[in-house]
Length: 150
Image (tube, rainbow, N blue to C red):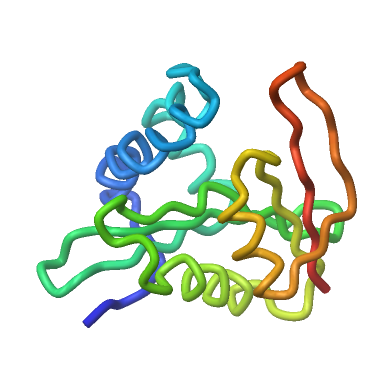
């Protein structure tokens, strides 16, 4: 049985470990081991914890196997760092995390971004009602896609 709950400060080190593991596939997509999620340190995660909400998914062994972060600013909920342990993906955990973070900030405009190379992420977001509202070419090989949901 999986449980989604707010992360506590003492969970942040485990969440950062999961982040390093979960974002390896993104690094491979871009052939770049220095993507921003892999360069974050514990202080960065603590700052995000203090700024908003971090949710975690805990499995039957009380291991953190998923997480998402969000904060409210200027009338928008910025959703980020949606991650699921690579061995637990494709089981609806990401969907449940996004739905749970929206319940933390009900009735708002939600915004998130990914890259055009992250096709499965875009499909997930669109399935959950997010719509593309902007694209931004960062480098020749990197284009961000911004999605929103009301």
